[in-house]
Image 1: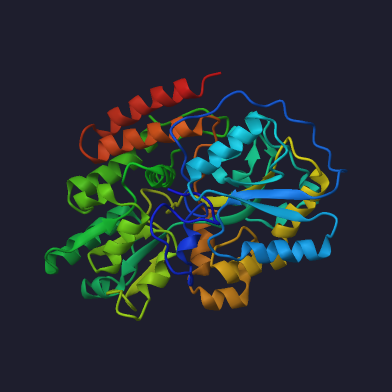
Image 2: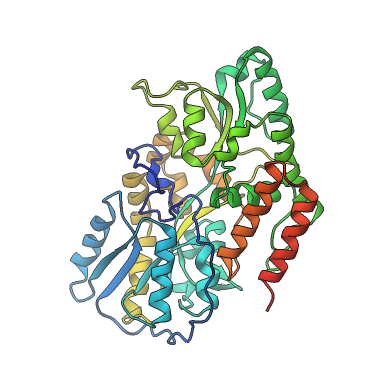
Length: 440
């Protein structure tokens, strides 16, 4: 799964518009390879007095809009121009190139477009520099996005883009079942599914991202938090075997066991689940906001046009919790002209650029102001709900060995959901793995 907000997941491109498919990528849940790096480090001390030309390395810009922003900067900074270095669409390939560049202590990349889950790894290895909070519009950003850019209380990146998942419900089916509001909890959702299926033979209940990939880590992180638990605390200690974490996984296992979640959902990523809902096969779907435009299409491609309610994702016992996605901008520890790099990051985080990016690409940005903007509210009627989703969102584990950690989470969760292990055993085994991965 690709993880750049300037690139799309490894599947066919979808038309832009609405909260378009390009909002998926990193602005949704970023992927990572199965390995984790070590070593490197030894980066230069930050010198924000140096000025001059810089490079901006980030995933491929399929929107075509990024170059317009760089041209705007370059027009006003003749001696401090930014050159775009487009990396591959694959998140794994992006991360590998970033790491290779850092381990070579190369100054080829100045500003780095990083998946939110890479912050800890890059900060711990001293591949990026700590940033001065007073030189960036951090106070204007949604707090949950700032958390993704922070490592042990220090800021190592500026949030640029963000995202949160939502629950999409079939309004017509709920009304037929005598239900006026979308469910707030899994228990409520499962009860509604029973009612709907009673009069709609062959209708499936709930779809999410349950395939063994990064989307499953997002799904588990959110459901565990909504049960009152956490996979890791703020000190980096794992709590996967807590009562709450087990309860979160068990709720999903119950959904599969009782046929509220179809067995085929074990193959669902974003697009597979989106298509199932759009084809009228699901009562409920948890997914990123980009799908809304597809559902509301009036060209005959959607069977749910005009029939969709949007709300927060369901909770176990607390509040419905999505995992926060996003794209952060950091400065390489080996870069020249860090002063210019810092100013460029501040430029991209300014209100004008944050709104323009949202308007032109349909990718949610990190600024609090864009969610209060009248124009954007009119364009996206669920904007307040999306902001609520991000505000309450769970952050994926901010650990150095993220690649290995996310793989362990996926293996444990998938083993349980597919029926191979029970929830308590799966999370107990996961706790042991996470403890070993985070030692030292």
